[in-house]
Length: 146
Image (tube, rainbow, N blue to C red; front, side, top):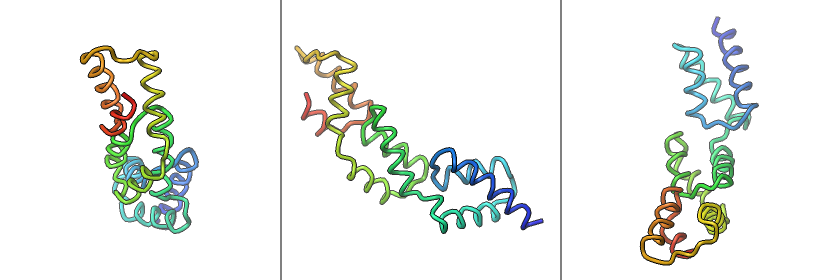
């Protein structure tokens, strides 16, 4: 029964990973929800996927960061999201440092939201700063573009 269960769980894991990248923790949660009380089998499946380079948290961090950055989110917000998905901090920091377009992304989001309106007073400047801050951009990036 164990070999059959391994094959079933492995095939489901392949099915999930073929659709999009997953972190190890994320895939563990999905498989555990679908196949409760099979944690040791799921762990073996995840180990095999990692050995075969099908499941890779470093690649997941890069892909996730690129996807979220294209949608206009800043490094701080993306870091928090990756931490919540239990991705290793080393992989997160490498992905954030490798991405080079944070300044351009912040400018694009500001332009999209405020239509090239330069802040005329303190209140409008704070409104734009707060917008970028909630999108996950850091203070140095915000200060450079405002």
